[in-house]
Amino acid sequence: MLSALEQAFRPHGLNLIGACAPERYDGTVPPAYSLRRLAPEARGVIVVGSAGPPFWHAYRAACERDPALERSADPLDAFTERVVGETVSRVVPSDARIFYPFRFDDQPVSFVRLAECAGLGTRSLVGVLVHPVFGPWFALRAAIAVPFPVAAPRPADGFDPCPGCVERACIPACPAGAVSDAGWDVPRCARQRAAADPCATRCHARFECVIGREYRYPADALAHHQVRARPALLARAGPGGR
Picture 1: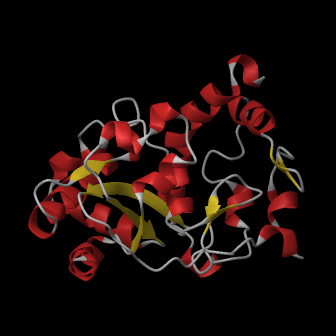
Picture 2 (picture 1 turned 180 degrees about the horizontal axis):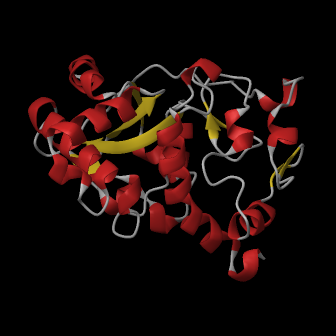
């Protein structure tokens, strides 16, 4: 089934799949985020992601074919739901349940924890997950809870790139000085982004990560994600970026 799912997703740029047991994930999160609470029948979770530019290209092509898609409130999220929903309905048993990171208010699932539990990435100094091949250039798009166990390759098991990185290009690249050996300083980052924002078009620290540079997103994709991420970052840092 995972092989069929991979083949069906690939033309849409969803080219990264992992899996884990719900109890493994539940052991890393507060009870409010528990999959056992949200999907008590689940015995396995399939984590779906996109690595590199293909997903963005597939999305832009879909907008050209269907201009109404781009006029929707959240066109990239709408595209994601369309592709994942249609594919899952064809490939995965009907009693599967789909979760999306942009539905957190209704589906409080930590996708960062899911990806870590599925062996897809390790947290970096920049604050994002890093994949051994794609570096920080991947995103988590959906999770599919299924009533049977599933297993997939775990490329990031034992992978921890930042401690041994010599170049550390991410640190001097950050205009706010929000990235250091201690990690990502969220309030400092938020203060910079709340003022004159030199990071409006991309995160410079993420852009300079030494891993996966050939998989960087296109400029328009970088700008799109920066705009979308800004409100959540400011909210996370609190009033005034404190």
